[in-house]
Image 1 (cartoon, rainbow, N blue to C red):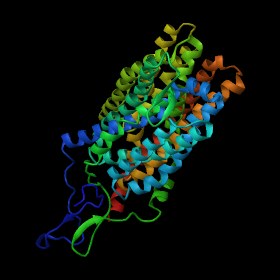
Image 2 (image 1 turned 45 degrees about the vertical axis):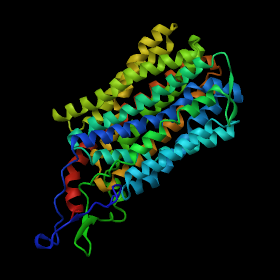
Image 3 (image 1 turned 180 degrees about the vertical axis):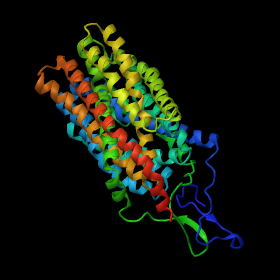
Image 4 (image 1 turned 90 degrees about the horizontal axis):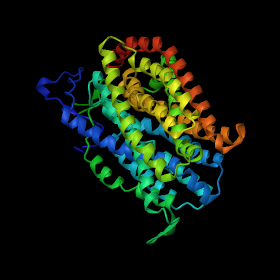
Length: 473
């Protein structure tokens, strides 16, 4: 049987057949297999964030070589990627619930890498905008598939930890991007351009796009050897040969479930989207903040932000998954919402202070806690969706979660900071006010929505067991 097939079968001997009762589910994959799968997915997630986040470090170089404004760079960094990432994820989520999840990731990774490579060939705003659209469409395949794979590889009590480890890919990829850019900037300090075989003369920001495409080759090969795990807690039926197969979900099941639980899903998705709004927006413009306000070069800011995020952000992500599972073990059933409320409120004092510091040392000292706190929910937020959704709907529900996360977080935040700098404060040197305004407002809104959703989240957990029992009939 094809190892990537999502049609898991369980042949039942005729002498033991129970025509109306599906066989019991197999055990979860061994810890070794499950964590190997997570490791490969972390690598691919890291690779996706190299493509996604590298643009922030290159803002000043691209502006200079292509004569673009902050607003245009905000459009390239936000809507160009996010709109198509968000809308592309919806049909992909439908496929994730029905087709081979590893193969969906393989094809998506190849596509977004080709689009990222084309960013390095761009000669103007339109070409760069179009290439970022391609990156968004390709990356829309990853997280709905990965969330669903991980949720079927671990018991629910370990999901937050496993998705927290998967979320480390954000910290690694997002922070390797500026380090790679800084290294290339260091090598090319004396030269604005370099001549490459077949590609001709290229700026250093274009070289960066070519280099970050290289991890795709080994990661794609490894993903092709990952087996699609058994889908749990879903309806099955016997075919004519007596083999039990996954039944097609009833039409309208997703809409019916969302209508019943719209307060839970809405508060969760919108609350965490506002945390993403702050995280993505500020990380996109943070290199420009240090360059403009504190006189850093591209190389200096790449190393500063990259190594800080790599160490502190990774620690925050792993801590978030661990502490959430611990809180659940202590009886906090709404831990995956409660942690978001805590993050939203504790980030504010640090995030309000660091943009206002006159010295880069003080700015950095207050920025470090925001990196740790802001990374805590990278795995917690998607784990909440896996916990409150029937398995047959997880791919589509994850796509909806990513839809809000992308439109509000990825789409609006980089553009909002660019617009605030250009039209509200009317001075690119006042970018620190734009960062402060966006971070403060977003975290306040996030804490409010997640707090309002906590009681609804608990009710949904109470109702989910009955829903699964009825759906299995």
